[in-house]
Image (cartoon, rainbow, N blue to C red; front, side, top):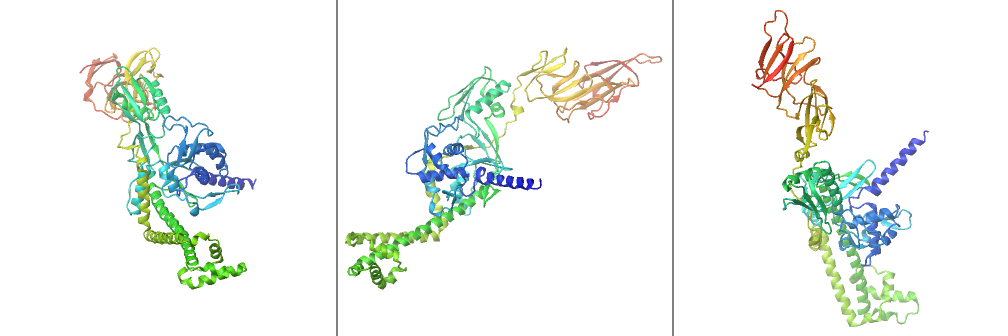
Length: 631
């Protein structure tokens, strides 16, 4: 047994690490989970400008992804419906209704221009072996924009989870520009389904937000839902409305879904019910309003860490600068190589060095003749000439010696020098260059990505306040049952959220939610809404001495559904009233030498005490009967 625990510990740790790093949590650098990264890498490899069958993309992606085709297809559809990096053709489902996509053999996709502009450069990408060692896949893509915030993400790993909300692409880029300018621009979520959002508790990506549907209430007899909150679908909203109606929280005559390209759910109200009476109930009891908690967990340096939105923007801004530096230096090297080659060609042709090889009889002598011919021009060449350079010169086409090609080569060399000068200036002012790059992306894509969610200040609707008191609370004295599904005397009009105080004939009381059917007692003294200012006046008798007492109290503190007693133990309630103007008339049991057989007491002359306090003794006589009369 000694080897089993370490074995389990090791295997579980490896499993947990794999799920966290390679499946559920996105990387902060490119904002992608591994399956998303592999899908985009596959699309880059397949890209020819045309649409590809998704089934074909899934098959190609399986070279990199070891978890089967179903997970790839689902992830591709989800990523495509973000409308950022994948263009789609065919039925990819409906984010409003929740309808699924068609089978992968019927739908097509390709990379978007945005993905080509911002995500891919294999020459500066780090690659590792795929799971079977037959292919190479990127560790992360060289993302020039904060993909993590633009896409959002949700994932559950072992012992941790992430919930990152999507943001507006243009606002994210503007926040990145502000960061490069040593400024800060607050970012808030933007959802593809639109609606309203209160971001007052967003806490830079680690708090919560309140989201609401956008309702058209221009008609007093119907409500039309035009936009839905993030995380809901038209189907789930309709189901929640129907459930609320069945429970009596709403009164509607019917509901119809006309959603196509835009959301349109028509809620027709019942007779006598108007729009202004129903809006709060829709927000309180249905999915028209919901609260979303967020948790920005990412992979950074191979470990899961919790960051905030500002951290992501700052890190991506620095990453952009480094990527642009790498691209400029790569281009600079390629241009210098090209300029070196063109310089050698120019010297080789204009100085007719090629004539030196006419009489040479061996390959070595030919190469040496070219080396010797270039020797006088080494200051102009500025780089050591290699055998490969000479081999390239010897392969020059004969037409290159024409004046046309000579002038064309000079023009090309001047363009290269001009571009090299621009690159040097860009590297010297890399931050300004990065800002210019982002401004170019914003200018190109601004019209494609307008903000869809309206930011407003919302007050969460209290379900208790929004509930309509349309249930009849009745009490059946014969059976002792109380509830809105009981036949008996009407006590109150209630909602399911009302709290009811019930005092039984024994003096026991409790505070309960309005019941559908509950046995309370065949002799109930009081039933009403909880009112902490209401004074209860109780006349009771001590069972041992038989003396009468009067107690006045308020019920201000309680635990729901817990039993209490309004009178001390071993006492019997004689009368209870909430009318403090009443007069108590006591009739005493006749005894020898007892002259006074009846007395009256004014209730308001006695002090109001705590509910746990004992009452004031009214007489040292045994009470025969008690009567209450108006003051």
